[in-house]
Length: 331
Ligand SMILES: [Zn+2]
Ligand SMILES: [Zn+2]
Image (cartoon, rainbow, N blue to C red; front, side):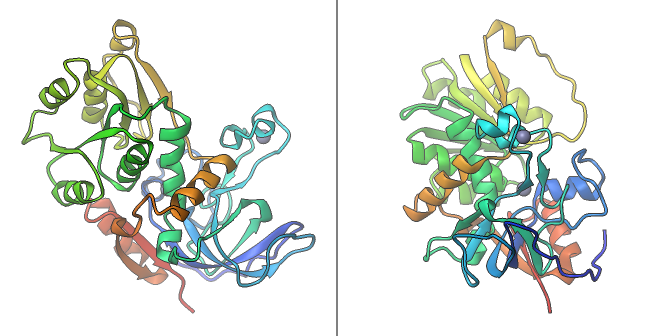
């Protein structure tokens, strides 16, 4: 990976150009850096969590004008014709191309985007927060679209990284009680979790997570466990902590094969579900949550760097220091 000069993108039909304000660094970018992400097709500009200002309209663009403040859906394109696309489940399209992996993304000054992949940022939402609309949508998809969470449920979130803290907030917005767990080194992240609404924050070396879940749920276990870390021990905690007939939603990526005892799926009749990105319905919900100020995104921003310091942002993020680092273009 390197910072290089490229020609600015040209908008095709029904595309426009977004002048990027901020792009967030995410675990997927780290996986791509280490060649652990199978959906990346280099040479490609990274960055799938970005927002900006509409700077140019291509042919046949309607509903947008130069100067509009927008967040950009990370699906650069999909086929629009398959069963999934027609059902609005575009995240399942075989031809889906993601920004920052299949198509040039937001760690750049300008990005060409389809006109129906943009969402107007509410006026009170800053560009720093705008860059977190994509991970927020990932969390909304996991909680509101992939799980059958209900108000009054007790849920477990493993992994207090950016996605885990967003899943926590969306689960709270739905009306659930949330237990969030982390390991040594997650102390700061768990403090933030507490501040933004977690009912119980557990550092697993210090507190017995399963005893707590047992007490909170009368021995039943949590209704839903959201695995947001991509770490084996956390997945085991989900299997142990979920109630019989409950759900585990896998949000984090392991980036490799894992070995585990899978028999609890049978014995406990657990439903294991994956949650991958989001679609147009999800993004509309994201804009509603932002409009109604139901989520706190700015607490997740740990720092911002110009693009030529991307290595520092990646390094801090990979070391697990802080939460979300933002990159911004340089002239
Ligand atoms: Zn991401
Ligand atoms: Zn399709």
